[in-house]
Image 1 (cartoon, helix red, strand yellow):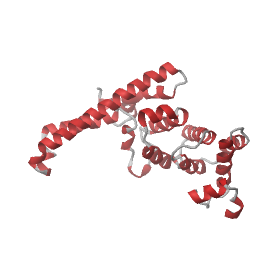
Image 2: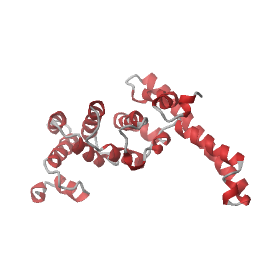
Image 3: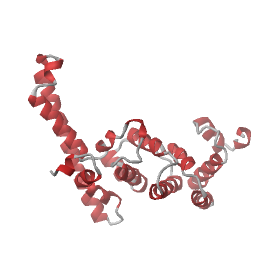
Image 4: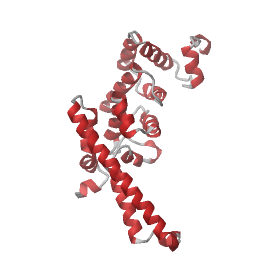
Length: 235
């Protein structure tokens, strides 16, 4: 592994995880190859964690302070961190505190992880299901100061999500819609609100309605009232 791969810069991320962009490929063969890499990477993480647990048990008699200085235990923990940095979703757990993602080298992979879940939900669920990671990333990405390329990707994600049947934590995308609100997003939502799919009509209509009411919270009560046709009573 090169110095760049060990580092937290974009080159290091690409060397460790560049193959993961195949997870969203339209070519099934490319996607299958990326899925195989991911399965192997996650197996490596599990094996490394087993080694950490084994060494923790063996060094426990040393006491907490000496245990964490013990060479074999320290090396097991380093190997586990390296394995995590080359796998999804584990690599994304090193997100900057406070959700400041704009300059984070892992940002393209956070977007990739969400795009994969949006476009190929069955494969995502089978190979890397992590609802908490999805929720955290969507919340952290719901900010208005992204550059145009990131904003465009977030608009794409909002559209994909409203067009499909609801999945766990999809409601969090209302935050993103509010953060990247604009004519482009509203045009896509308006088209989705006229789609044949009842899911798309309901969800797109709900998001558009909330965009016009920025002070109204996106709560389960508000959603249920919208679905029940009680939006007029909510303002």
